[in-house]
Length: 275
Image (cartoon, rainbow, N blue to C red; front, side, top):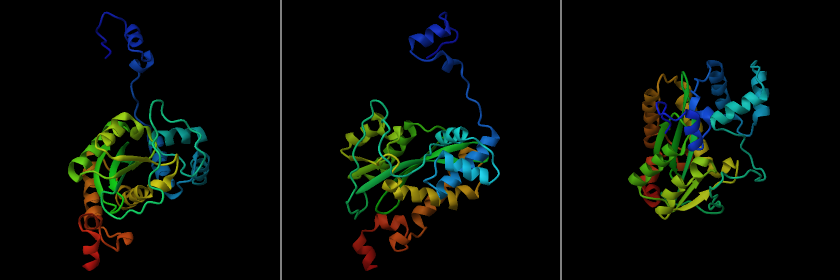
């Protein structure tokens, strides 16, 4: 939108577009290696202690010999897209203009595939840098229906993940998300509404509402991501893809009578019990 060769000064163009002149001149800087190392450690600590906020995480890092201020920890948590997860009064305001939908799953028994789907985003560390992983998950079978990697945590790749799941697996009765701005925006909710899908949103910071996706993240990271050091996004995409194929097709789940998600998703329950 900004034409640096135009006769109008950049400051005038920025004012006309109602954007900050500083944002025009800004050039993103790579994340320092020291910060990347701390972010990788914060990711593990967050999985182990999801209730820990910036103050507790700073203390845990200090106990490991890492001297860092609480504000720096908070900045890195925001960059990673993580926060302390616990029940608390809903005192935060939603993104202006974004509608927050009620939670629809309280007391509902999930008895079949495609009854409820859910989605979430997580931080994926690499040898240098990081990416974000988004998935759409079927609650009943725990099957990953679609997934995408992105270098930025925006709504576009979340919408692509959703549209891919709808194209290949039909549509659920209810779709559950958290209140992240990637999921509350019209780009995402519009796709659900246009397909006649009921929209459900977790309470703010209520990680147990989306517990099946949280369990998936734990499996993905401890059984795949933390065992690797991806050198590139393409390598991360290929390796995570292989793991998710294994997760869907071969990895047994105790909650599914030691069957894999594919079997639970594609085989009706009466036939599984008979077998």
